[in-house]
Image (cartoon, rainbow, N blue to C red; front, side):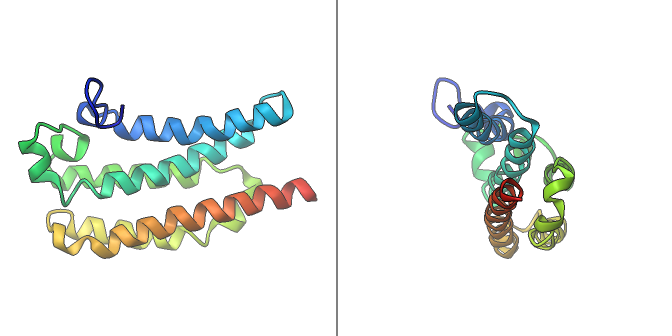
Length: 160
């Protein structure tokens, strides 16, 4: 549904929303199956991680922007001028870290410097796709570290 017909959600500007929702619904569903009740913690955890994963998809659209436009892929990076599109990354990063419950915030700040460094790289080189490789790697690292620390924090909180 993300890129394949008939939906091609990313081409319609809905890719990041769908990916975030997918990563958000997975922990909510698993938590409900395990405990038979809903909780806000899996919602915040899934939203936070899903936004960082969506940022990985988002930043990877900058190098492909010209080809995507020619192919009719109208995601937000293609729809907006590069100087405006880069702020979508900043917004999703801010929402990812801002959505965390206070319980796990302290242990997740290790991924924030990676996200901030990637943001800086994107803001400087959004119009220069060849220069985005370090920012893309930092985005991958931020999402990976974030997910591992988030899971560890939730386990530790459960044990306390």
